[in-house]
Length: 204
Image (cartoon, rainbow, N blue to C red; front, side, top):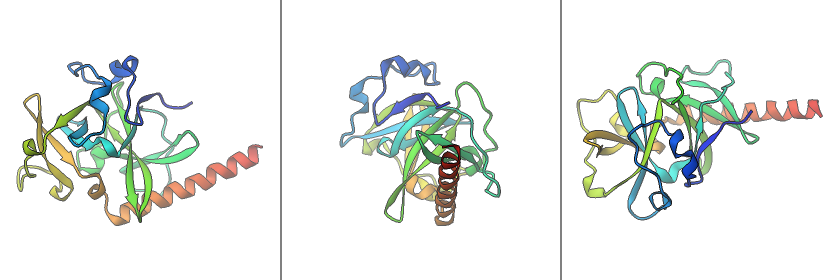
C-alpha cells in the first residue's frame, strides 16, 4: 500500500493541511508555496530542534509507511520504500545527526528530497519527527551558522533563522551527506530497483 502524500510537487491541498504535525501551524495557501526569489523553506522537527530545507529541493512529504530494511547498510539508512514504482532509500536524520533513533509516532513523516549525484538527481527519503510549515525568510534575516553551541557539523548548515521566537537551523542538503554516503545511497537504490524488477518479472 502506498503512502499518503501530504505535500507534492510544491503544492498542498487544503484538505491535507491538518495532516501536518504542528498544532500551531498557520493555514497553508497556494501563495505560500510559489517558488519565488524570496527564500522559502519547509520546516521540520527533530527532537526539540527545528530545521529547514530549501523548498526547491523537496519533492513531496509522505506519512510514515513500512520501510524495507536492506542488509549491510549503515544504521542511519533504515531501508527503502516503493514510491510509485521507484525505489527510494530512507535516511533517519536523527541518527545521521547523532541525535538518537527516531521514535515512530502519528506525526512521523518522510520528506522526499532531491540530491545531485554526479549531475544526476537522486531521490532520498528523510525520516523526521514531524513536518511544521512552509515559511518565507528574507536573506537579511538569516544569520551565519554558529561556530560553537551546536552538535551538528556546521559545514552543512546554511544559516540560522527564527520561527515563532525559536531558532531554525537551515540545512544545505547538498552538503549533509558525504560522497561515500551518497555513493552508498545510489548503489542501494540501484540494487533494490533491480531486485524489484526481477520480482515483477517472476510474478508475471
